[in-house]
Amino acid sequence: MEKTLYRTLLNLLRISYTLPFVMASVTGAVFALTVCDEWLMAALIPLDVFFFALFANLSNDYFDHKSGTDATRFDFMTSERKEAIKELYDERVYWDGNIFDKGDVSERTGKIVLAFILALAVLTAIPIITYGGWLVIVLGAIGLFLAYFYTAPPLNLGARGLGELDVGTSFFMMSFFTYYVIRPEWSWQMFLIGLIVGTSVMLMRFVDQMSGYEAHVKGGEKDWCVRLGLERAVGAVSVILLAIHVMHLGLVYFHPVFLILLLTVPMGRKLMQGLRDREDDLRFIRPAPQIVKMVIFSEMLIVISLIVQNALPWTVW
Image (cartoon, rainbow, N blue to C red; front, side, top):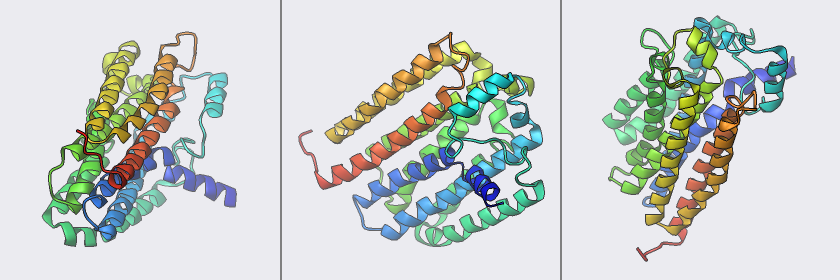
């Protein structure tokens, strides 16, 4: 019983998707703290984003369950391939299947949990709204809209080819506007950090869609992978990855410590080598956990760089 509950909680948390949410907000909070001392808001906003992430992930699972997308994801695989994937993914961090499809959580319970999480998000948002005013209300409404209708009918943005832009926009907002709500002053550096975070998570979603390509085609979805086809999608991944690295170099203008973001280059190279390995039966599946690790690592490096930038100001430029 305890083991089953533990596994269910892990699937609910979905660290691989929840942590990028939280870290995106943390980048903005840390940058704000370099120019002001609003520690309470810097703690409350990432906490609220955490609840928001849980709501987005669970609602995504619920509507994928209703549409049958996750249930058909593995219908096209042999038993040997399924076992290989099970060994490949770290179930504690990545994904152990849709909790509704597996029967770990009933639809009724899922709705109750969703309502509870949403209530926590709203309660946590009250002091943030008091601090930030109408801007917080507008941003919160946009965020909930993008999270809920990513998979929810009638919009189902993910199936219409707008899912990647939905995700990229959401994460840019979480990064940049966490800063802007705390410190309502324009910052090109924070804007660039927001673009990096948003584009990185958009790429993470793009790569993740490759593993469910056959199911998405069968379900009539029109995400970028389906529209491009897997081979052309690989080329698109390389272009987006290059753009992210160029933006990393752009941050060096503000402080040389951001050169440490080049530590993600070998991870990107490994990702592309895997996608281009035609001899590997799992070449469109293996990169999914790799890109997750790369995105989280990149966000952590940005936070570390911001702390160093604040401690050791650089004025050479």
